[in-house]
Length: 231
Image 1 (cartoon, rainbow, N blue to C red):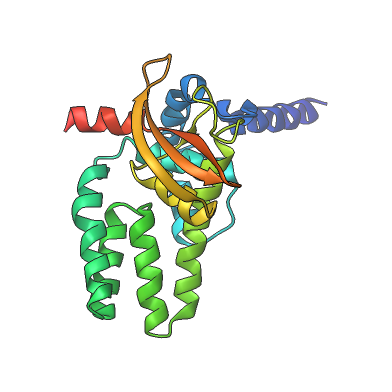
Image 2: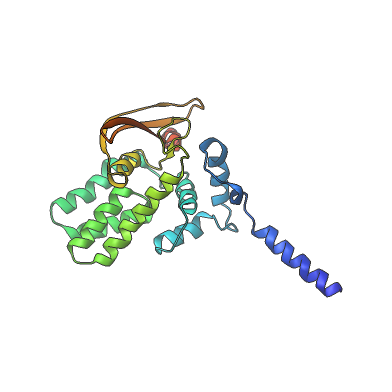
């Protein structure tokens, strides 16, 4: 009897230990969950730890949209997160190399850049293009699948499909919203702006044409603002 109770306690203890505060989240909300998720990604014992989810992402393993979302949030506090430098320098460099037909150089440059920031959509796309040009379609497809993971995580982050400023999409980088609308949604982009919501969060506001109508989409990039203040 004593042995049975001990085994039962071990099973219950193991079950409770494996639980995460993120398991109860049904729908992401920036105000309610951003800091909670960020904290959990730093817990190496958690299934949502940044290191565990990054390994899945870079090894092209199956992940849920929520797992990828936690991964993006985990990186938003990373020392290698330099959103505007990535746009002004890294994105441009790899694009220029492809334009010049220097595909192997683009591959070398892109892979090195992804070691610092694995979630740069422009770099993932350009790197996929370069691999395709040299005939490595397996890597081409894998890299494009990574961009799809990011897009789907962004899409799942809003219960209102991003058309309500109170329920914006999460966007890791300041241009990710543009890539999301252009490449994932296949919408034509219109005017671009920014502002603050009722919580004081910095919001990227992008207009797009949807079935011949102009629609505003909202993307929360407050973590970008905070990063730039710190740097």
